[in-house]
Length: 213
Ligand SMILES: O=C(O)CCC(=O)C(=O)O
Ligand SMILES: [Fe+2]
Image (tube, rainbow, N blue to C red; front, side):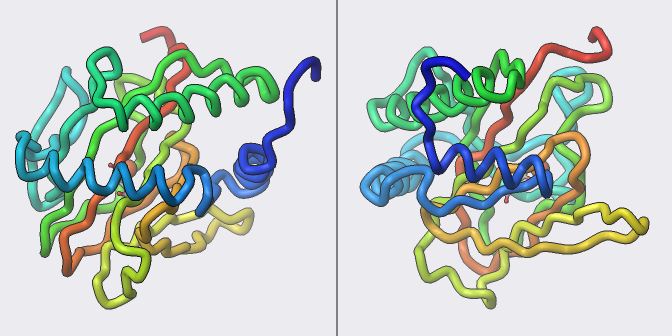
């Protein structure tokens, strides 16, 4: 490895992804950055239109609220707010690190804000599309209170395939500042019903298509 300053936060993520196909970090962003994103997302929610999220991609998009009830707004990386600059600087630095240390070949990323209103959820699914296999790593960054409680629901449940053919369920509370990263192609997951509005920034790091779409 030439000319790379080791970043312990990124190294921990890379190790965990290598061992478990998922990683949870609580300090990817500083608490000041998290607070700025939180304020921004809440202001956006009231002043800009979040729209009902769809299933599938542009070629076969459907809105089915019995599968997912969140509202989203895509972030335009070419037309960003100041606070979003900070977000993308860090994410792009991480992407460069992944590419330089692990040769991951990430070429693109896409991110949206998500709001799950009370009573909504996202049923079990895998993030990579059947007709587009470029999504490689899923990243979900939570912007709720730090003391989000189990009874508020909204856990991200990951279903990790085990060597003996069973699955292990891991439940992650969406507390402020927490970043969940997991393999987009192999990890089924769901968002449990929420009892309070739940905010996040969700996105995907994408490689070139393997199957040539
Ligand atoms: O918000 C989360 O915890 C996960 C969201 C998710 O699975 C998705 O948007 O594909
Ligand atoms: Fe997902």
